Amino acid sequence: MPSREFHKLVSKMLFGNDGNEIHKWVDEPFKWLGNKHRSERHDPFTVAMLQMTKGKDAALHAAAHIVTDKVFSAAFNQMNKQIKKALNGLFSI
Image 1 (tube, one colour):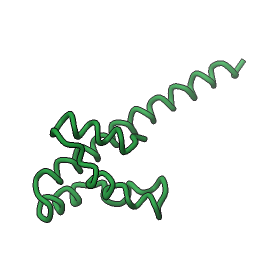
Image 2 (image 1 turned 30 degrees about the vertical axis):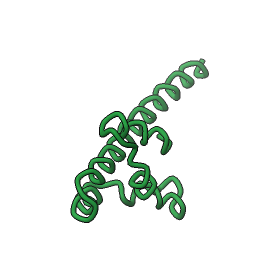
Image 3 (image 1 turned 90 degrees about the vertical axis):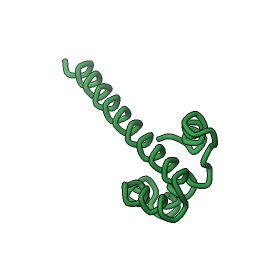
Image 4 (image 1 turned 45 degrees about the vertical axis):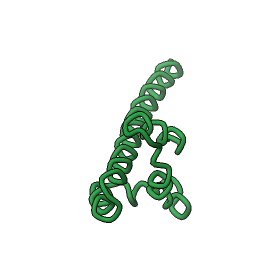
């Protein structure tokens, strides 16, 4: 899925700064949850909490991070389905 560098680029384009610390914090659960890390800190509650504790900019970076992950996941899943369908067509003679 999107790297932190990609998240930073999106933030830089949208908000004028890379929001690195927020992106790092949002994905920190990867250390103990691995690929299931999006079950933590990737939700509207996180955005609201950051708005209250760190301000609007932090909330915007987190929201952009979450949306970017969702878009990439949807695109990846769609591509995966199309590849499987094509392979099934090739090998079901």
